[in-house]
Image 1 (cartoon, helix red, strand yellow):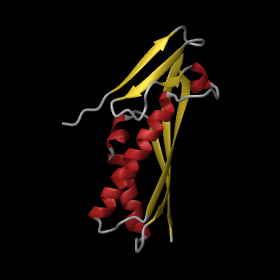
Image 2 (cartoon, one colour):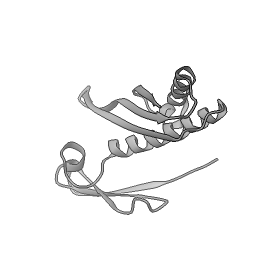
Image 3 (cartoon, rainbow, N blue to C red):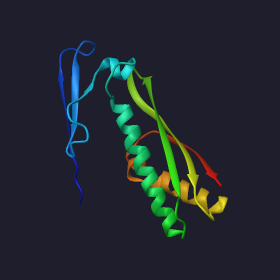
Image 4 (cartoon, rainbow, N blue to C red):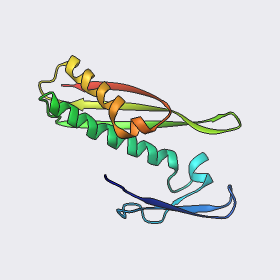
Length: 142
């Protein structure tokens, strides 16, 4: 069993307060977040951006594994995860994540690439965690 941790601290009200996020690894160390970083363009990060980074990383790593199982090795995989936060039922919810993938995989057929990408989308641990519509546009480049 693998466990990782992160922490958050907050001071003040919702709109005028500020928070800090840290991760066990130290990659994030008292990184600022707040209302202005979530709903405006203030400096710092926000939960949706962090979920997007986690999902992009998880999916891309899972895809590398699926490609390996199929006898393929990627020269380059680049994924962007766009997380949608919508107002629903008087509150907010993450309703969708769109994965945009560009891949360079020497010798890969479109069919094998598509199968590996769809498998990774459905089965990476972050995809399994999210209760949102997850879509994928995957482009194989020469």
